[in-house]
Length: 91
Image 1 (cartoon, rainbow, N blue to C red):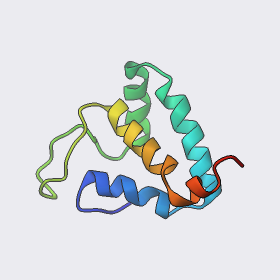
Image 2 (image 1 turned 135 degrees about the vertical axis):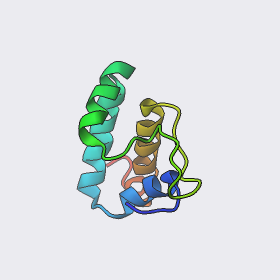
Image 3 (image 1 turned 120 degrees about the vertical axis):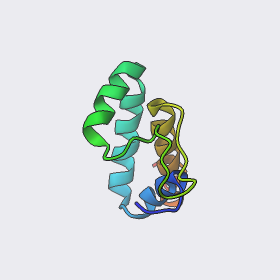
């Protein structure tokens, strides 16, 4: 995923995957977000190559999230609001 800002990178995610992957990701993120913050933090350390809560200098104005729950919620919303997913709602 690419972007000048962390939020742009999140929005890029759905565009690079097929519908099946998007649906599976939505299901898995909903399960993850059902856990408490401690578990979300533990799981995130194993799957993320970045710390979305850190304020980093490079690239400039990269942005950060106040916590990992907020980060994963933004990822979930990006996948849920993808036009391909929206077009198949109700299927």
